[in-house]
Every structure is written in structure tokens, then in C-alpha cells.
Image 1 (cartoon, one colour):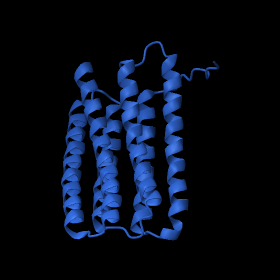
Image 2 (spheres, helix red, strand yellow):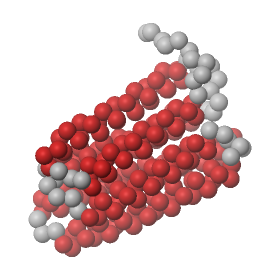
Image 3 (cartoon, rainbow, N blue to C red):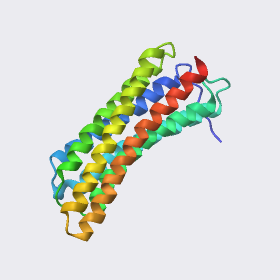
Amino acid sequence: MMFRKKKKEFNYFDEFIESANYAKEIVTNLREVINNFNVADIEESSKNIHEIENKADKNLHELKDYLLKDFLPPIDREDVLNIAHKIDDIVDGIDEIITNVNILNVTNIKKDMEQSLEILQDAINKTYDLLVDFKDLKNIQAIKEKVIEVNNLEELGDRQYELAMKNLFENETNAIEVIKWEKIYEAIENSFDACENVAESVEEVLMKNC
């Protein structure tokens, strides 16, 4: 197996931030597509968003390659992998949302989806901020505050999910549409959970190292 030359400047915390930046980019793109929804453009929009997901995957693979030959990472190897995968789950979740909109032949966007994605973007932005603070483990108070903020936004996302599902089952009479939107709302909910999982993983590392 060929290994890349070890980069002295490689920094896992910077890689976490870069991965989270892909999450910010992909949710921004998704919201733009949904807020300016055009059925004719959805196939191309899905491809563009998937390209961002591919870039995030590449970043994850590079981190794993480096970790494989790193003798002494700054935090436990398992924690590096765990956080990296949790961040990637956010990006994958956004990609799943647009994929569902595409393959389920959605023709009209529900207001509940727009509202959920607005909260989700806030959660992802706050997760990014958390990872910026996480670069310095001495930022204990700032990290704790960001963890709480991410968790609060996840709870807000949960409430929005419940409201959206209630509205769906109360007001949608077409069974196929119910199935479509149930899958879409669940994908959004999974993305909220992914943000919370990152925050919890960071908090665990903080408790182990401080």
C-alpha cells in the first residue's frame, strides 16, 4: 500500500473544522435549492450537492490515512475517528435529504420543511463554532456553552419534526405523499441527531482530557 508523505502541518482539529465547513456549505446549498424550488432543476441540484458530499468523504479518507500512521495523535485514536465520522454523518444526512426529494419526485415544498431546514442550518453553524473552540481544549467554558447550544437546537428540531409529522397526518389525504414526506422529515431529523452526536462526542473528549 502506498502512503502519503507525512505532513508536519497536519492538524486533526483543523480537519474537523474543514469537515464541518463542508456541512455548512452543503446545508446552505440545500436551503437555496428548497427555498427556490424548481422541479426542472432538482436533478442537477442533487448532483451539485452530492459533489460536496464527495469532497467531504475525501477529507475523511485523508484523515483516516494519516491517522493510520500517526504514532501519537493529540487525543485518543478512537475519539479522532468517532468525531470525524460523526461530522461526516451530518454531510451524509443533508445529501440524503436532497436525494429523497429527487427520487421521490417531490413537486411542491411544504412550509414545514423550510422551517426545519432553517433550524438545521443554525444547528450546523453552531456545531462548526463548537469545533472551532474545540481546537483549544483549554476553552472549556466556551466548548460547554456550544455543546448546550447545539443540544438546544436539536431539541428545537425535534419539536419542529413532531409538528411537521402532525400536520402531515392531519392534513395530507394522499397516502403516497404521506410516505414521501415521512421519509424526508425523518432524514432531516437524522441530521439534527448527527449534530447532537458531534456535540456529545466532543463533550466526552473534554471530560477525558481536562
